[in-house]
Amino acid sequence: MMRLAVSVVRRFYLTMALATTLVVIAGFAPSYYLRPFVRVTHYPTGIPVSPTLPLLIHIHAVVLSLWLVLLLVQTTLVAAGRTEVHKRLGIAGAALVPVILVLGVLTAIRGARDGWNPGGPFADSLEFLIVGLGDITLFTGFVAAALYYRRQPEIHKRLMILGALGGLMWPAITRIPYIAPHSGPMFGLLLALVAAAPIRDYTTRRRIHPVTLWGSLIILASFPLREVVAKTSAWHVFAAWMIR
Image (cartoon, rainbow, N blue to C red; front, side, top):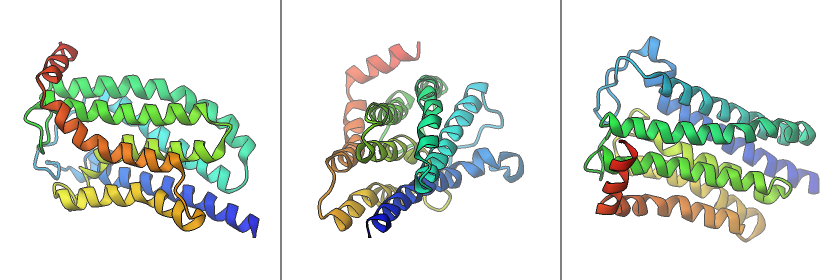
């Protein structure tokens, strides 16, 4: 019975890693991964797709894709009971984190300089800059904490999934055809992904693990918080300084 319970838990985190990967593929396949074949001219929000992309964007995409592959491999190894291999491979993941942080910040700044603003509640690219910086902050914060608690599996695995949910899901969701730009389906998909772990915790443990609870709340609360901060004059001054 104990082995069965452990197996179910491991399969859950593998399923979550697979779900996040599929969401990223669904969002970025038309305009990036399948770009040479699909020839998409506009994002679902109606903004034209640039015919050329800067080298920075390609590097950013490759590194984050590697991270997703690594996350999927790592959860597969744990599900298969290959924890020693998982630990050794984790070194590669740790090395990627600062690279992803730097690339994420540079990509967000490049977008603000180029006037990137897909719409929504943000008036201009300076306000929208907070979205990219917020995503990379959530990702880095959760993953850095996961690496710190790597010897505590119950905390580690939750933080790793929260990093993917908080840092990678929204950019992908806003690009998924037929879902974007409709706010209801977009937030519904995000909520379903974020709520999966708390629901699994409650149904299997009769309580929600504190990391799952607070991590999920932080992700959801970051959306209205970013909107409020982006409207302030202090943020405009900060954003203008960043893109100089």
